[in-house]
Length: 201
Image: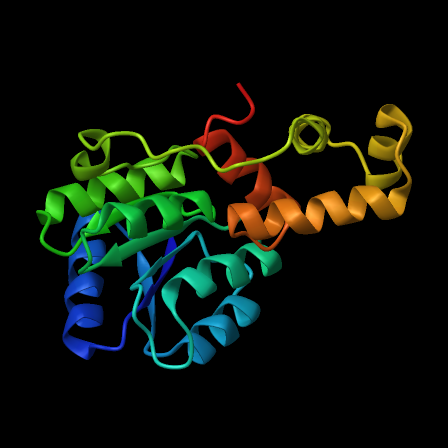
């Protein structure tokens, strides 16, 4: 197993490395202190199994990093390990495609469990979110919801246009608007965010 820990505090990186090496036999832990270093590491190591990152990073925020890694390696799980326990931060990270969110105040066993879940393709959601009232659904039009449903089914822009009687240019405009509304950067993240918001039920 190969993990990348991204945090600007060396003591956090070193502590994570010790924990991971104890919890996972044969684990290799790479370290990065900035967003730039993290992206370079992702590019250089195609065999990475997971990225664990903080939300506050020199050279780029963790939320931006989730999206950036998702664009480069959509198959690579990204787990957030951050100080913030703000529900909106957690929900936004999950909507962007993070496989989980662990507050730094959590027990080490919780972090290990979250890593295991992420590696199995599951999502770790902290109790603070599970116990919070649901957020209001993003405002999307009925036509945008139709576009989302077809997007979820893997339709191309051209195929979505054909199915809905729209030009490809109009489909692109709908997608651009949806990306902005859902605060995402690509189609995969849009589907994930739409599911989280209950727009595809």
